[in-house]
Length: 127
Image (cartoon, rainbow, N blue to C red; front, side, top):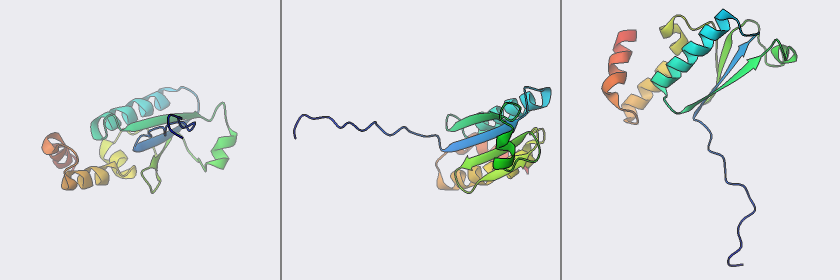
């Protein structure tokens, strides 16, 4: 049937990196973790990430369902496999390793998908 449009909605483009950050209220520690996660994502995967904040103070049932034992907990759900770290991300190298962003950045450098100029220097600085 010519001229008919599909009724399907266009596929929503999802971010290649999806992070879930579990907090319990807006505390100084949770705000630091949020700010540091955003800063790391802007540096290591700019424009390619989505952050989802889950406040366990308003949804305590999710703590057990998602196996959250401490806060703040950060999960990188995409790309697979899921990576989890528990911290306010104050130690950058440990946070990058815990979320497996350092390994992904190194792989991207070798495949040539990112500009190597600043990333290679940053990787050397972290080593």
